[in-house]
Figure 1 (cartoon, rainbow, N blue to C red):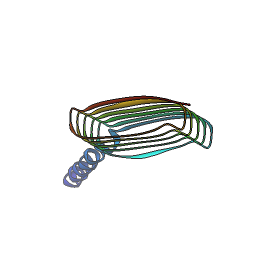
Figure 2: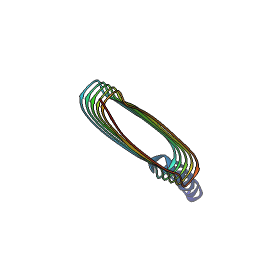
Figure 3: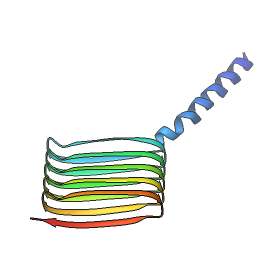
Amino acid sequence: MTRTIAFATAIAAVIGFTALPASANDVFINQTGWGNAAGGAQGGFGNTIGVFQNGVWNGAASHQFGNHNTAAIGQDGVNNAAQTWQQGNHNQAGVGQFGANHTAILSQDGNGNIAAGVQVGNNCAADVSQAGGGNVAAFVQACP
């Protein structure tokens, strides 16, 4: 009987440790308004996704594959869309959009990259792609 209990305890411990990386990622979503959508995917550990949306028909998607990546998307307005794609470790991506009809895509493939941007007004578009390590990119757009 003692042998069975010890075996069951060992199996439970292995299952508990195996499940740990899936719970080591964070997602924070705060939405007000109507018709907003947010989603994404995470693989690895120590990743964080934060989304804030206020308005109507805003969309956000963040995809993280690696470790210790951070993605933040903030949108205030109507019909804005933002995507972040991170492959690697210790990448940081952030998008702030205020107004209407903006699109932003930030892609990072490597380690230690930083990309951030702000779009204000109507109909701005941004596409940032980083490959390698230690890259830094920033954009600010005001569109009529």
